[in-house]
Image 1 (tube, rainbow, N blue to C red):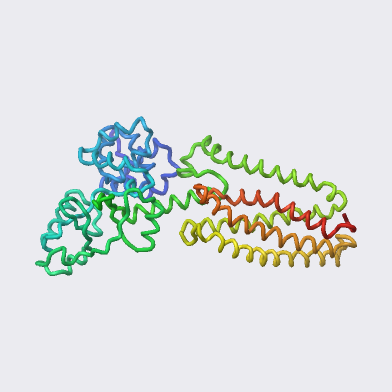
Image 2: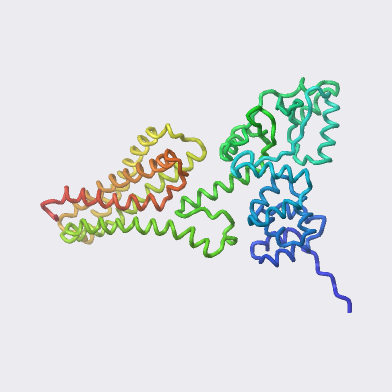
Length: 440
């Protein structure tokens, strides 16, 4: 009885099922993808997924898939593998690619040098347009995969100019490259941070940016598809930090349970210890609460309003700093703006709070004979707490940036915890001033 060959799996079907598959199931399923489409599917995977797949394959298959990657992508895959496997993976590469990968591994992962592809289209300034087009055609056949622009280099590899393919095809065939190239160059150094590179892409609307060393020798290019991945990773990291935890550095289901606990428990413990200060503050005002129990009814209202306003402010400023819309020197301008915003927002919430207390008192008599004073206490406290929450929430990212930390570490839960304690102090201070001689 003949055994039937397993049915092939189409890439889209496997892509949909991929997150739910175990490592062994991924390997077996990947082997069923038709050869004509397996390359595209493999290249669509993240570096971590490619690394896991390559390590699970046999030596011959491992070499095939590693050699499919461009040098910068091969670096990402090798960096995603355990340290004790990297030398073996490097030996699977051809000599030229191995030298390129070694050079890229010397750069920090989050710098332009670590992102760049050392294979790019290059031409000489004295070439005619026809010669340049023929030379570019030969380069794309041999090793250059990404051809957005052709970079004009001298014999020492100094960057002289850039010419687009459109310019080459529109120019007369007997013209020289130096006659049509643009000398107005946008470049980055090898050590430019990836966030600065992403902002440059956003502001200049380029498809690729050349990377040069201190002597203006061209080392490679960073392409827009590389930077899209960087922007996604940076945004994910910032969102996770703002949520009050360490960045995961991997997709949710690929983070081990213990690793997940470690990244979440630390911040939760810090926040829990911070909230203990709230209990301490409540204990300090225990006598006031005992004499005027009605004050305790509005504690959640007061501290949540301060925490919410602080969380709003810190989120706005963190994002503005990330987009370079706001700089360190703008701290005082932001402070003035946020104080005014805090007073206005506090007045709105305070007004609503006063109306609510008076309406309930009118219909239900909930707050006793001094309800008007209680309403004023809550209203003025909301103005103070919201103003303080807005100011502290907006200034904390500046303070962290000034100290050299990531502003995203000023998580919304952390700001809320900070404002909770100070909000109680503001609330009971206002209460002691307005209610002394009546409820207190």
